[in-house]
Image (cartoon, rainbow, N blue to C red; front, side):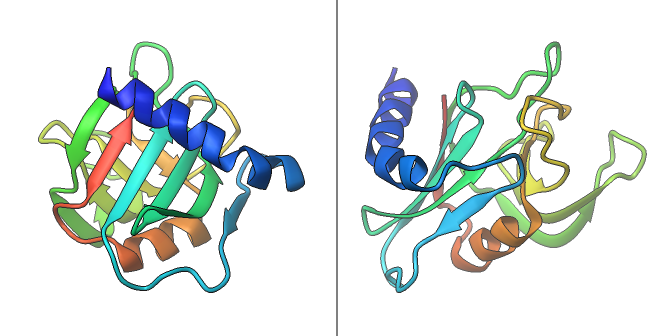
Length: 149
């Protein structure tokens, strides 16, 4: 329930940004002059296929995503970032590259750069546009919170 409420709040908070500049698949918005200090939280909307990034409670980024396709669904919940690797290769899926990987669980779910067709298409991970994934990777730390709902 907490994840659903966080997603609804993020969606409402980001509505003016998205209304001003609708995002196409692979698109994102990043605030100029965003705070450089404070806790980071990432909120993932599976329904909207968007990621919302907050620092010190301020919305600083919105991106399109590609979550898990049917049968390989991205799990909802609240996760800490467990591990970060600039370049990782999947042990499950033919050594597939996972740039800017941020692991969320012990079963292989992660945030990472990848194809972003505007619909669920991954094996459960949350794929992000490459430039957005790089910005996010640079500012997060192990332990930062990711909310998926």
